Length: 210
Image (cartoon, rainbow, N blue to C red; front, side, top):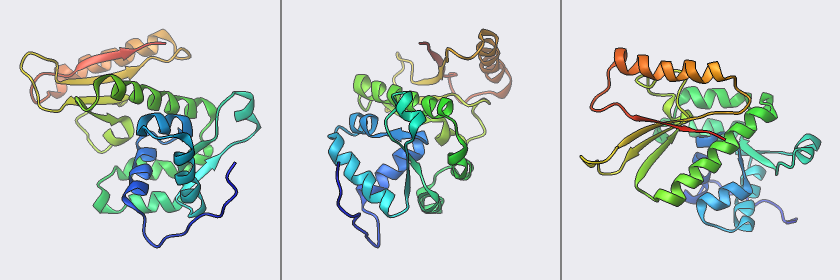
């Protein structure tokens, strides 16, 4: 384990800002999943997070319950990081960032859902590369034309094609959620398509099951 002191800088680098925005995108992240998404080794990602934790931008969470559940250390935005990203120049969802002040109250079940979303995002990137722009539900909270509850992901093809599906709304079906709740969510999509209107063809609804 690294024992060196954090390096303090007056301003963040582009690489550090990118890492903060990726943490914002999924709320809770881990080193192994970040390394997979970024295509970097775990030591490099850990060092970058170590610096951001030392500077107060990121919070590290790890305790006995994580160890028992075989979950690695979890990272989320700390107060300083949230305040930085709320700056208008970053054009991120103020609603999502405000909710992240409650990160300390989130339980393991919620954290696992965020990690699962990051894992699925990594799979999308691995299989489709840059074919789609992929937005997480936290990024969608700024837009009122998406159904509520928000989909877990929205995918939009880069360079639309007439003979292909160009947009997807992705919903992750969790084991612990009763079947009727999933049915209710599907009806929400149907009502949204029929009543709210959508510019162009309505996105294909993609369900991801365990």
